[in-house]
Amino acid sequence: MNGFLSTYGFLIVSMVMGALLGLSLYLPLMTGQLSLASPGFYALGGYIAAILSTQVFKVSDGLYPIGLVLLEMSIAGVVSGVLGVLVGIPALRLRGIYLAIATIAFVEVLRVLSLNLDITGGAVGIFGIPQPFLTPIEYLWIAIPLLLVTMVLLYRLERIRLGRAFTAIREDELAAGAMGIDPTHYKVLAFTLGAILAGVVGAVSAHFLNTWNARQGTFDASIVYLTSVLIGGTRTFVGPVLGGMVFTALPEVLRAIADTAGLPLWLAQFLRDGRLIIFGVLIVLGTIFFPQGLVTPDLFKRQKNRKSHS
Amino acid sequence: MIGENLTTSNPILSAKTINRTFGGLVAVNNVSFTVNKNEIFGLIGPNGAGKTTLFNMITGLIEPSGGQLFYQGEEISFLRPHQIAKAGIARTFQNIRLFGELSALENVTIARHIHTKSGFIRGILGLPPAPSEENRTKQKALELLDLVGLSDRAFQKARNFPYGDQRRLEIARALALEPQVLLLDEPAAGMNPSEKNQLSEFIREIRSQFNLTIILIEHHVPLVMGLCDRIAVLNFGKLIALGDPAQVRTDPAVIEAYLGSE
Image (tube, rainbow over all chains, first blue to last red; front, side):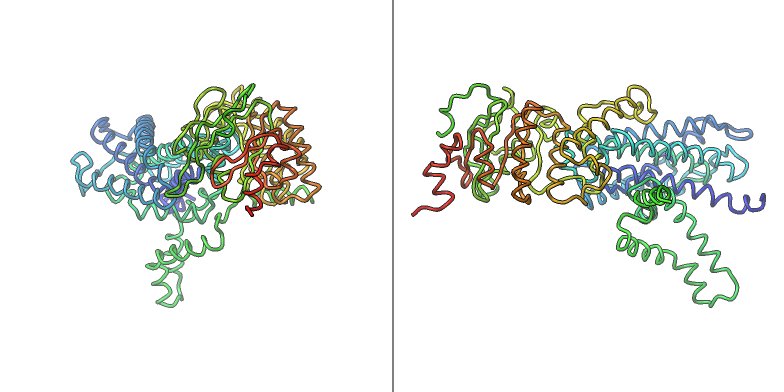
């Protein structure tokens, strides 16, 4: 077990982070807004934690206190939330593909800024971010509670007045307005909640990855998390959680399969290097055959019915 | 001008020389009228006469190009749809805009939005008064579904309902707003004759039960004539007649608009 955890600890924590980032994309999607801004807030949260822990708090001896990590997470959440409102109000005047493009631009702006500012360490980034734990797997002490809290929050959200307003806007913004729901207000709220979550996850990730630079939270990352939400499912929070985990693990699984003996050389090569092609094909097939993703609310209802009939 | 000289006792909604142009097309042209409290007010006219455009302006979906709209003495010309809904004007849509993927019950509970207020924290944590408010919302929604005869299918998806039931569900959803004024855009479209008769009866019922003022667009002339207290006739964006059914029926301008001149 110890061997397993030390080998796969990094991957397991990454999967939980992937699930969380999937959820940060899912939140604006609850109001029907396709936003790719999450990686931007993720990068921002990471820089906040990296700068605070290496330049402000400067704990030199021993393990870095977890309390300070939690403090950084809170600060990252607040800053991301404020920026989320500021970006959200103008950006959410756009819809569909235009909003997606605007949020990609936002991610790019942050990336270029972080490449050129002194405080973010330029192209080198910030390294030697202090560790609150001895091994990667222990990051689960932060990641798992964060995931559980977020999931419980979303489970509740889908069942209350606020979540209904989100759903109404997703289903038909115009009709939602006619029902007395202010679409702008709730779209900005959903976008901001997603931004806060991404920022908080970024803050943990900075410690977890030990270094933070402009390669974190790029457009490529947007696509990976978009894949996990689109294939996982866009109608229930379970979809992005499973999608985020599977698509974070998929490259490693493919690499492992490629290493099995007896495979033809070309196939092994393809599994190792062609995973982006596989991702792309999955997105295309998924959106054609499963427009709501693989995990849909109907799936749960069907299960419930089957139980009640038997 | 037609309609302006009419003495109105208890106005709730009025349009003053309201205009709407789309590019060069004048969809609604200097229309003025006043709807009285508790009235069933019909809006008829050939296709493209500007009836739905007028509805869309009243409910804030589009802004008037000119003129003013008043509701209970306040100007509402440039309010946004959710503000109009909050003020007490609800509507149904000509091309049915239910939340199709959601159940009938969810469709109606969504429309309780303005009459509930629990926010993020209380809602998520289930702190009082959120749970009791949630129960009342469900209760109220079920009552409304019962009123339109759909309570036995409360958990079915709205898009799986037959056309006539979808129209009824839309009315239930609009009633959930507890409006003062209800705008019905072709409520009888797609209904068979017996359903149409029931609908007339139903509209009268909800008017007295909820003390409503109802404005309806309808193509089915017998239904409009039998149901409405007053009728406004639009043709090419202009108000060509306004009065009680008997007056409108014999109005030469109306006959010309519907049958063409000799």
